[in-house]
Image (cartoon, one colour):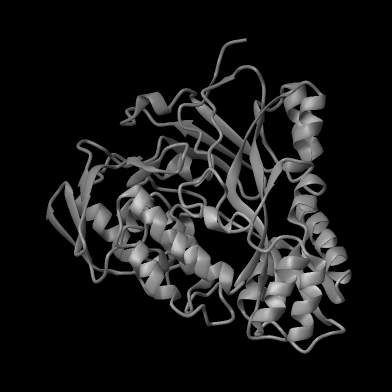
Length: 447
């Protein structure tokens, strides 16, 4: 929903590559990233989206307690040579920053709407952005109504006067809403694709960068041993998970990126094939011929529960006893990140740039890495990737990072899965993407 009300400095195409947004162009060097802003763009209250506004937002994003600060690592300062130019000074190469600005750090808020605790709290119900819609009604956790802004700089992106976003956790209720015509579109997950198609509904999905994985706290239990982590990787039949728990709407994962993404590393296509005998050998080498036990927390969502139960059964076949502890999504990740769990069966949300995913999951200082350690050479390999802005050269360097992650079995990727929408035939302009659907240019045709 944030994309409806907050425009970003950089947008993404359906392949998750950068295209102009509030910044109509940019230049990247080893020392700086220079943004050239569109002329005549305004916030919902009519005030200009100028260099000063962007500077205020980026300085806010860089504050030490900001959740977006790690995404802007390497930025040492923001200057504004003129009202349409913003320069980010860098202390290291930062090819990842362009796509970082298509994510939360690049969502520009009216500076008059933040800066005090009261203003910051008010933004939750009254967003103040430069996006194509404004919030006209909000029932937190239930329903939100958005109304199109007149004069938005990209009129082709606005094809409906209003959007009503209803929060519905029951997948069957979502399908029923589309069938009845009460909803024009509903989020579709692997477990609802077949049901929707069997009802004759229109379904459009794409294999996302999001993927399910077993993330391990390498500072707890037996997971500090490489052989143990590798044993887990060999003990899991990913294709069986894709075929059963995901009902075939998934791709077995051997790394953090799917096959059709530019950062996919072909040399890892057969990493850790399903081999229970090899898993048992590795456990014996680790001094655990009779296996071991650990507890994994998981999100109490249907897909996560089904996947975790299959993993549990497969690990049991090689003598590993994985106890499952379901938790609400709001509790599971914080519990793991605090270091209060051995492992978590979770979904790694795709990031706007591969380097951002790597640093958040495996960086030694990342809040999402409770091990507070990483593979030898990891940061150096990641820095080398961030020196490359040309796509293929960058993909090659990112592949080196993927190999380090895989060789050290820092986590156990499981499956990439399809996500998208179930739609009525009246909906036009929708195209599923690798990341979060933006709904730009989506409208409803007359019946």
